[in-house]
Length: 121
Length: 110
Image 1 (tube, rainbow over the protein chains, first blue to last red):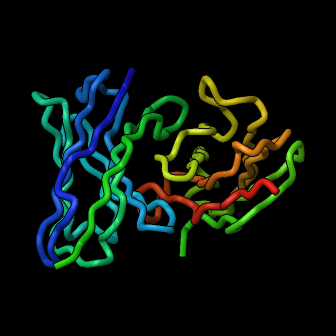
Image 2 (tube, chains in turn blue, orange; image 1 turned 30 degrees about the horizontal axis):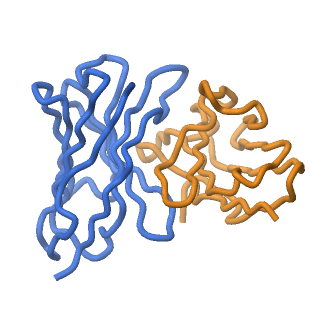
Image 3 (spheres, one colour; image 1 turned 120 degrees about the vertical axis):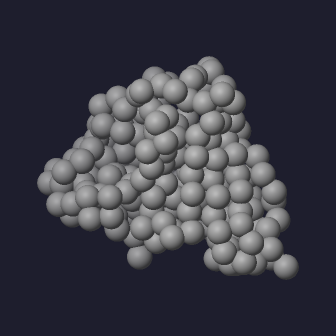
């Protein structure tokens, strides 16, 4: 069974870099049929797609975050990561990692439980 | 302002049929498949419908999806109290070269 688990600091100071890791079990992150994605959700608001990364390291980023965003994949640890620089209070949200399945069109079929990141001094 | 437009709320009584709309454009729904996600309170979203109208294993056939042109709909028949949740549509968007979500619809079972 595929499982994803986010990890990282729950509190980040303004202007610093938010770093999260998603550990994948039950599937190989080297799979050619999947992208590995990050989605976030501010409290009481909707879902916002952050970006996705392929096993080769090829990325797609949300244009609104692109200048501050870096995603990477570590196949040896079967995990992928997110770094968001120069954070502000607007980056406070629950961050989810998810697997994007090729299938019939691409869709998020497995999600992590989410991790709350608060940006505050 | 979300790229995909959903009504913020919907409601129905147990046993009723409810539909939730999702409106987009030629750069997203008009070109790509549409997916729906259900988010129960305090939990991560869950895939409900993929490829416009396909249900993953384990999703009851009370849930159905359809797409026409640049719009899509999620229908829930035989509404149950456990269907009370937020529902999101999502698609790829060529203009943004990324995935976009609708703003979400909160379904209340009266």
